[in-house]
Image (spheres, rainbow, N blue to C red):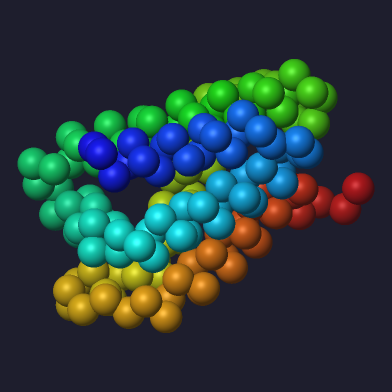
Length: 144
């Protein structure tokens, strides 16, 4: 898990020094994850392929998923303590958000995953959709 440890260390540093809202922090984390995925694209494609096939690496990727949920849960807890977000159902919220982000990535990259031929042009599309989904997730779609 060295590569993911490298990413997690960078994320933890970002969280530790962040001054601003929870929403701003999560947007920065999306950009960090985007840079990581661009750098290690083939590993990312393999992760998605394993989800589709359900092979032995599934336990490894479940561990990564659980780490992502836990890290986001901790960020959301801080946001709730600051009064920025509702503190109810934070773990479930983190889980749904992580799954939403991964689903968007999977949907944008499914043809690459099936063909095994990477198309790095999709990175911008994935990041744009994840940012929009994050905005909707935090702000909702209801008129205030």
